[in-house]
Image (tube, rainbow, N blue to C red; front, side, top):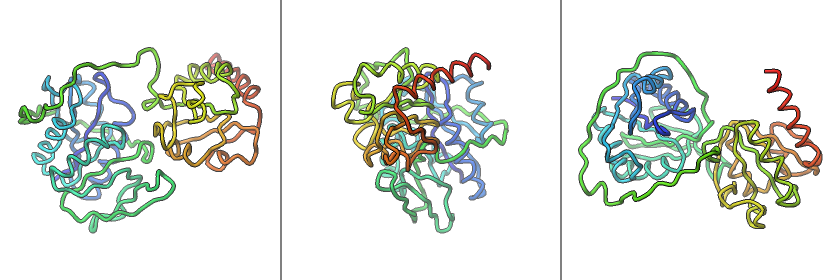
Length: 324
């Protein structure tokens, strides 16, 4: 018996997201009195794989088949399901990102396992197995009881802290049996954004709304994001007006993100927008309207004109970085 966690890598490197998943899986494994097994798909150097052991993985299965160097849902489902069967995993954990949300239902069907997506905490109990998950786009929580022997969970980013107990994980090569049926979808081309931080991967996001008044006033948003090593985003009205590309639109009908820090400048905080950013660890709001809904969700608020506040904030960040 074990807890299996699928750890994504980006060009052979793991990010905070993967370490959060391992930490969460390790805590569940302790509750169940079993071990934590990490699954890595793709070419990752041994030194990078060993990092997973620092966060609680006791064994790492590495799959380096060239056929799965790119994500193909059917093939990855087979790999993860076979790894779970090999390790006798009763709990399989993935991230609640685009890939995790695509893979988890397929794995659930393959293994006849119960599924809880978007979980936000450790199980309340393991017998019965009851776990808290987000519902209604983050506006509520539901306690879900899973009765099946095998459970599949997807974890909301930033809903669980990173724990670093330390340890040396055993690395084992794993060769799953894959057939042509697993590759009925063929990846022809991959286009990657270069030179900027991807919005869905960013730890810091600086976002603007209609309070900026026009596309010409976006300079401070971009400058602050660059200084902080973050990404830029916007509310739906901004993208609808054509001030910013739709790829930057966050909210219920846009991208769902969970950065460590979300700075909302000139955004009123409509329910649809907050649904896409509510999982952020810290929200900082800047708005002239003291009664704007965004302040109810914000951890820190600044009542003021974004055109005056942002330049001051940029200067403060520059001074801090100069002294550091």
